[in-house]
Image (cartoon, rainbow, N blue to C red; front, side):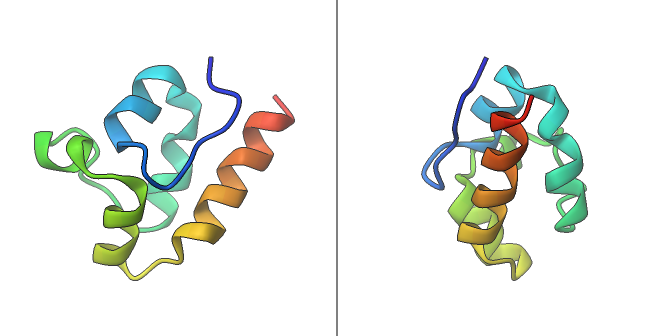
Length: 68
């Protein structure tokens, strides 16, 4: 169980540990969570591709994880 994520973690590692974070990635427009290339991207890389502020996404996910 993850307690906190960072923007240099890969999407795959996060999803493998915390499946409940999927909606956060879908909300940012990342609908290809099952494809191998997206799983290997870091949070920061995925956010750049999708035009999302990585710091905001990390803060949202960490808030969720803290309150689980």
